[in-house]
Image (cartoon, rainbow, N blue to C red; front, side):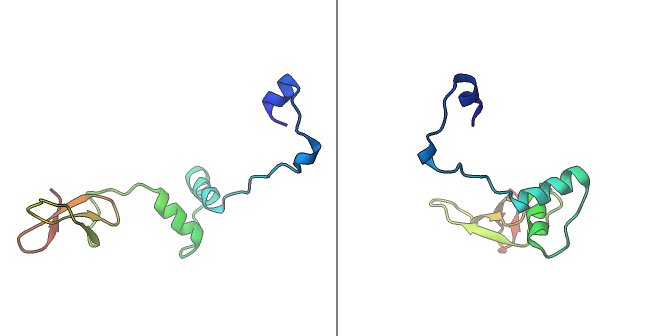
Length: 100
């Protein structure tokens, strides 16, 4: 029963059926274990991927190897977004990507 129900006496009707239980999220558990307890998951597992995605990426240390081109009308140069860190990128005259 909810806190509101306990305070004001509201009760669920018996025909409403059992209350849905929340299921634990193994990805969130892996992230919390890494952050709070320092337990790192085994490489290559789903938990390792969840932990890696939860950590912030340093845009200055990112090599910006995989850039996704973003098409914008009226742009003189092609623009893109780094797939790893999310930095905005601009194409040079030679076709390389650089930070603006």
